[in-house]
Length: 340
Image (cartoon, rainbow, N blue to C red):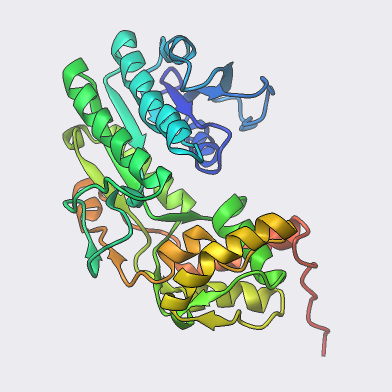
């Protein structure tokens, strides 16, 4: 990779997109970032002048803007996703992916690294998740549309002579993570979270920079075109342990627990109550889908084919998250021990 190499990044203002861009800049790669709002210069400046970010206004749902952004690039990292309803999710995650692959073909870009999700396999899972599990075709909008989007990426890539490598990350966390760090911390702090089955289900967390490592390997390894990889941490932790870390940070008790069967009954009523009272509910739809799982995400294929090796342990990751939460004012500064 040289300073003349240019990578296009969709979803560039998202949690993963920003981390990827920082890494690319550090490697001397020029970045063209497709952004939906504004053209804030210097948002990803690296300070050493070796590479820079060209921010281009556009949206993956607008084929023309994607084509303009792709021209002159050597690779596309497709990180954008979204949509709460099926219609919006398909417009962004499926048709947006179509626009990215078509733009790559028109620009002569050889490879697209497509960020998919472990959710493409749904939430009814065996003890070990591997890449050969079938895609889900029913359920919530995110999982179904991401499955449809990944399938389209491979089919259209093959038809347009564009190499596609898909990554299926698990729960990506780290400083600035709006969902797996900020949201779960705030819910724990405000006692607005309920564990399911004592929190004994498994949370397959993966540190954000480890995902970025896998993205870079998916670009630079020539022999992985057309393949998909699950990306997760070295091993899962229980939800009790994960939420327990936030509880200890803010000196709150571990949240109460309900059995899975009761959570399924309560969740619809809590959703209605939350809408009427405008107060957060203790069980979210994502909690209901993920907390009961006892599935371990296998990263054997990524280790073997990508050379993937998670570099940040759960303990170290949570220490870094706590330090960031304190720096950003979510927690009070740590009190230094008094000298003896």
